[in-house]
Length: 167
View (tube, helix red, strand yellow):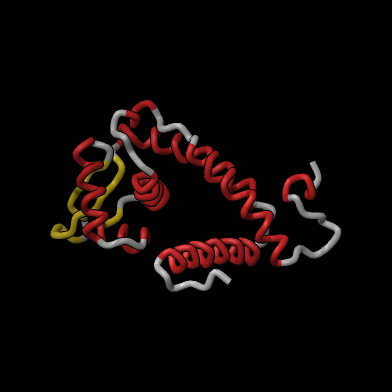
């Protein structure tokens, strides 16, 4: 399949902003739909988990146990929101809250041993797809791509909250 087939754009000429917008507006709903169809592992189905849970579990899976404050910073939400999510997941037994060995007053959150493989499986398809997309890029190109997605996400939020220009 040629690049033109995958993106809808002719690779022999520069992609203009409007062509890029058109291509992405057509592509993103398909990406989101496929992502939403990622099945929840059988071990986790009964808990009715949502994407917000997967994001929290992804940080714990990739980065290991973290404090609620660290999770809130990474997820860019309030610590109270993370506390609620952690409380919910802890109640299901999916995560453990333990004392930090370096500071016994501090609590850290980690994935319960029996659920590590289920979380890995849930993340697996996305990890493979992102590796396929990102590996051919240079580190600078990866940074540009990720930064672009962040700007896009912020612009969507700004627009929804009346701070953007639909221009």
